[in-house]
Amino acid sequence: MRNKRLIIILTVIGLLAVLTTTAYATSSRHPAAPTLVGTWNVTVKVEGVPETFETMHTYFADGNFVEATNIPTMQTSASHGVWIGSGNTYLLTFGAFIFDEQNRYIEKQIVRCSIRMDGADHLTAHAEIDTIDAAGKLNFPV
Image 1 (cartoon, rainbow, N blue to C red):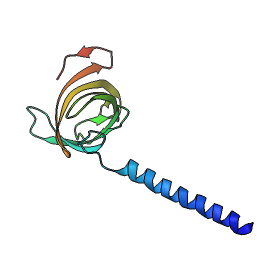
Image 2 (cartoon, rainbow, N blue to C red; image 1 turned 90 degrees about the horizontal axis):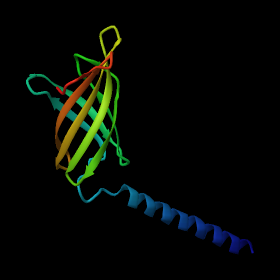
Image 3 (spheres, one colour; image 1 turned 135 degrees about the vertical axis):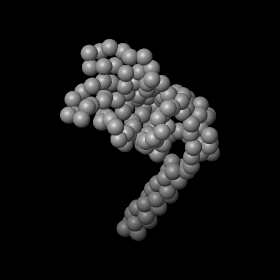
């Protein structure tokens, strides 16, 4: 009786190990086609401005988005937004709060981007920025 119970327990443990390994291998495989989902280090070049700056974009599989940036001339909150698309074409909209040197709220920026994936590890985006000042006045796209 004791041997039978031991064999059943070992069989169950063996099956759990196989199922866990299979589930991990299935969920961790790389997709066949490039995908926007993940975290990207992005270098931003603003038209007419010689300096670039860096941002870190995270695209979640459920369509949510967050960004952190190192713009040296501006204090910003983390950016939050949403994205849609498939294949190599995507649309992204996100917003952030902007503060002055004394950490007072100045404006909110809303960014609208069209994104094209040029490969598994490279993308190109074009953006327009709307600003809404502290009084709620919308300024036209930058």
